[in-house]
Image (cartoon, rainbow, N blue to C red; front, side):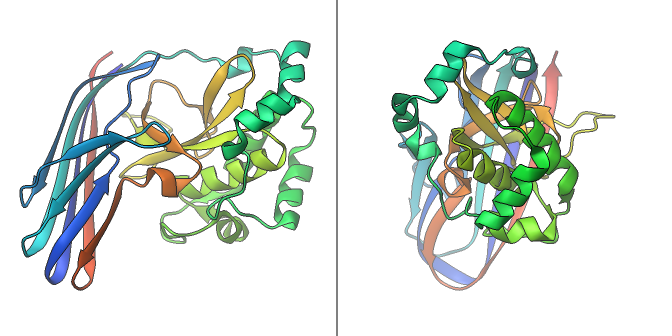
Length: 283
């Protein structure tokens, strides 16, 4: 599957601002299943982009605008090819995998993805409620699948009830939210069961007649670490394994690590307009 993605973010400021420093994470990654063949980013007012790789392995572009401006536009264009086959339901959790999973070395290596974070914090009684509903956790692969299905069934997709700064413990009682909320709740429970889990930011291709749902901007899902296999993507918003329709930008412990746009400026309030198009160009 080959896609062309155009992502335009336009900031409208209430008055002129200056001293604007920004970081963007919008460059799709290249890995064993996904290849980025073209990428371009533009900023208005014009600014020089400087790129680096952050601690989590994500591409980060930084730019500084010293002049006064009342609008800021960030436009990125990407061409990405993905070839991925269903995997997780075919994996048998063997005795060798179990030994690795319960080892101190495994836990210490993935400790960053087992520790609680502000976005993935949930009260013990909230986690217990979910774990009791999902059931047996002796097989972390099956538990992850069952948990994904339960969260998908329990949360109604609604973009009006939560905000970008909503935490898992706040969204769960609402039983409604967007992909970010589904992902944070799922990660919270996986961590409690000792299953390393990370937050993934990307795009979702929703073709004609597709049953998939996702944000009009970037999408979010979860990756779980399976001993001897590696990270496997699960999308609780849609109750599916993350396959060829999921275009990966980056990953981290939670939304804060992969926020598409972060910045500071001197001035008044702002409004943001986001436009994203994901076009299938070859199959």
